[in-house]
Image 1 (tube, rainbow, N blue to C red):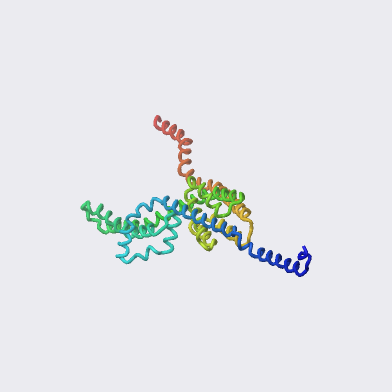
Image 2 (image 1 turned 90 degrees about the vertical axis):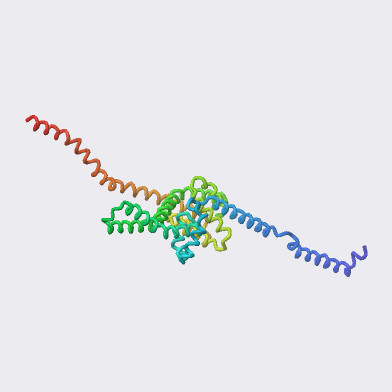
Amino acid sequence: MDRLQDPNFIVPLVFSVLAFLTVIGLGLPWLQPDMFAARLKVIKRRREELSLQRRQRLEQQRPSFRRISGRVDFMRMVLEKLNIKNIAEQPALKKKLVRAGWRGPAPMITFTFLRLVLPFAAAGATALFLFGSGDHSFSGMLLLVCLAAALVGYYLPTVLVTNAATRRQKDLQKSFPDGLDLTVICVEAGLSLDAAFSRVAEDLDSSARALAEEIGLTTAELAFLSDRRQALENLAERTGTPSVKALVTALIQSERYGTPLATALRVVSQESRDARMAKAEEKAASLPAKLTVPMVTFFLPVLFMVIIGPTIIQVLRVFHHG
């Protein structure tokens, strides 16, 4: 008890306790586990798993054009021997095939091979059909017909790819408002953009396959690309539709300037509805002009026959009896 009242003992004891508590306070954060870093690792691992699942699902849902991929090795060998392999590496050709829904090197090699082979095949088949009859009196005309068949065979792959890309863009444009509305609902429910895209892709997988595929690819790119803006721009480049470009622009501006994502998506959704309504009104306004030619060609002659026909018949009967 006497030592507890001694200042020479109390002062060092107090400073020792304070020093011990200071050391404990400074070292305690280092002893505790970093919950934030652990959470980030879990989120990163989950994003990688979702990206892998999405890529595997897209690989299982390849278009019918890729079913001939087993012959790609032969086509590639032919192109390499003819030294025209670089034709299949053109960026413009790749863009056309991607917008048609055909990705990877197999469709590009197949397209180049068909564009090389079809002119000769069409010309040969036409020559065999025409010259096989034994009539060679119009050899010049037959040669022109074979040349026309070769031109048709040359441009046929391009026409098929263009038509496929146009049909796919129409499908995307048709299903885009539904996908955008689902995205707005997911974002307003508290999901992030990546999670919203993943959920929308799953919901639209059965009803809008093209849009679900594009959104799924964007989800995968947002997960493994370092630049999120590049992933969004790739979506606009793959689709080539004005509505998707407007959505991408809104998303990029939202991430750059920090505007609420749900508000930006609602604005894009309203603009998309207004654009669809304006397009429907435009089609309705142009309908009378489009019906003019069919009415003049088909309706008016029948109407004249119904109105004037009985009079003509009566006149003919009068002349016949007279």
